[in-house]
Amino acid sequence: MLKERLLKSLKEAVEETVKTKGIKMKPEIKLEVPRQKSYGDYASNVAFILAKEAREPALGIAKEVVRNFKVSGSWLEKVEVASPGFINFYLGEDSIYQELDQILKMKEDYGKSNQGKGKKVQVEFVSANPTGPLHIGHGRIGAVGDVLANLLKMVGFDVEREFYVNDAEVSSQVENLAKSLDIRYRQLEGEEVSLPEDGYLGEYLIEIAREIIKEEKINFSSLPREERLKKFRELALNKMLKLQKEDLKNFGLRFDSFFSEESLYKSKEVKKTIEQLREKGYIYEKEGALWFASSKFSDEKDRVIIRANGEPTYLASDIAYHQNKFERGIKRVINVWGADHHGYIPRLKAALLALGYDPKALEVIIVQMVNLQEGGEPVKMSKRAGEMITLKEILGEVGRDVARFFFITRDSNSPLDFDLELAKEKSDENPVYYIQYAYARICSIFSQAKEEGIIYSPQEADLSLLKRKEEKELIRKLVSFPEEVRLAAASREVQRIPAYAKDLSYLFHIFYHNCRVLTKEQDIVQARLSLVSATRVVLLNLFNLMGISAPQKM
Figure 1 (cartoon, rainbow, N blue to C red):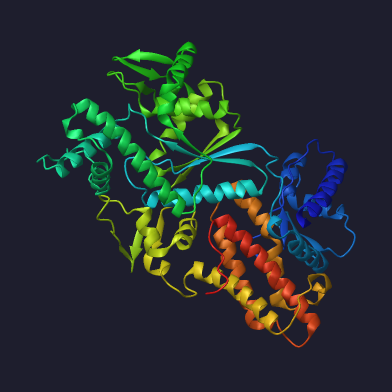
Figure 2: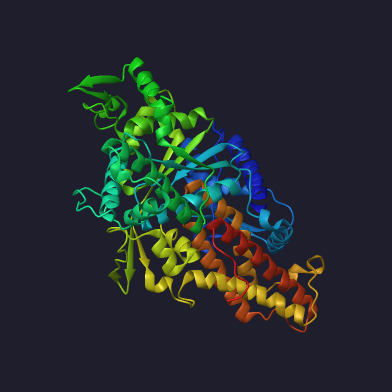
């Protein structure tokens, strides 16, 4: 890869500079892709790091590094120093042609790296309470988590995807679900009973009650209340989880495991974890409840883990759950949570530290809410699930590809305005249509070439014939794909991928309109078909990362 080659030469130049200047440090050397093309293909800030140690201006250090930079051949066009001390690298044409050839050879492997070195990482995402259908917010969390998992796998991590099912019998929400289903069942049986104020209002429970009446051979109304509620709790959880799994599948999400919260109680892991904390002196009793002394670990206050009535809080099982993760050999845990879980981060990290784990091994990505809009006005669609807009409704309105793409277009920690009108557009205004049309256009070019009897032979293509501005800009964008993948994975900024896809599609459409592919000059045809083929490879790799389809016709 070009970046690795460049990085090796830069490291050698830095080592020589350090030796010459008598600097006693080994700086971490990074290469970044500048936001502006005029600053080159790659840039480094290593001179600023060295300047602090040498107590000299960064500009002078940068010039010294460049003087020590040795490069042979024409793969690098030039190296420049930019005030106040950045070093900018401009790749030569030979190098980008060589990299273009690599794309054609590597195909689906282009962009992969061994940055993660096979380390085990778990990404836990969605993890919705099994008390209702998945809503639009779960959709955004799911898209962010899934694309992040795809990115981490592409850069060499051993990725596990997990969904945490909050199905503990001690949960007040699960208990409330059972009571609400009990009411809906009895209503269908003709009883005049009403839902409690805190009951679940969605019509999905009426549908579940109808299924129970149809499928079950016994009349639950005749059972004692506690026995009836226990049965309804089990039926409701199973049916809701089944519905959620169907929505997840339709949205293109897959999980390696669905971890049951209830299993932590059955295996007594919650009790064991609390006892461990007690032995370490971090559990105390106050007002009849058990408290975790999380304020000793930078949390703003101590937290209740067992209430005075004996019921555990969510924190109790959350602590046990995360200990379970690390006991499974997972080296890094990444949780993708909704904004309402933000306050849980410091208390959970405090618990891990108290148990002897490195809290830095837990990373939490917060995903903000989604505002569904049409024509600038808020949209309220759902009549069947209470006040929420369900994921199923969104998929029915715009389809999986558009939904997934739109959900990852912004920084996850910023609210997302989902424009329903734009999402339904079948024009270049819709970014999903725009990038998929680029792929379909590529397929059309190859179909036309076949019809005209043109045999594409990549081995015979002379890529150095690609001299036009539109061709070279497209090539440079293509060869930056591995770096874009690396940066997106390292920064957890999944929004970089759809942004890159839009930019690449734009450059391809510009190339297509200005550079006729199937001309009478066969050497130009072969070169341009190679460029088109490489674009198809990278687009397909992008689609796979984002989990959207690659239509051959539109």
